[in-house]
Image 1 (cartoon, helix red, strand yellow):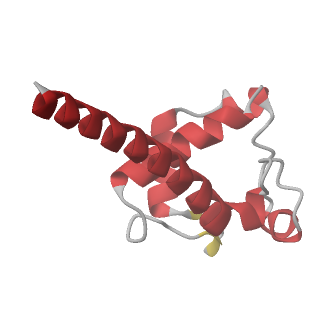
Image 2 (cartoon, rainbow, N blue to C red):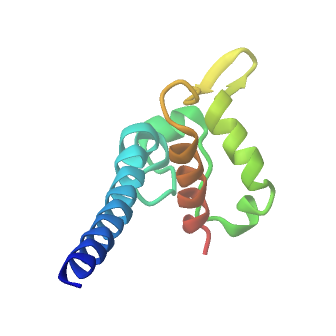
Length: 111
């Protein structure tokens, strides 16, 4: 009986640790790959964001203009305008799960 309890407690601890690690991954990926343009708060009030024409992700009306799938596609393929890269593609840099987590992060900015 003690062995079963120990196994259950260990499994529960691993699950909690994994979910905590996952949240840290999203924050780290946002800071590393998105924050320089979109800012920590998603408002795109950074020098790089202004230069790239990044949009304010806290604007709910703006966010209603696109689906989660469209956000994912932009993250995967990047964004170009008139042949100029405005956002680099991340499909070779981030996993599918990391990209989906970033989509969810983007949605948290709209209030």
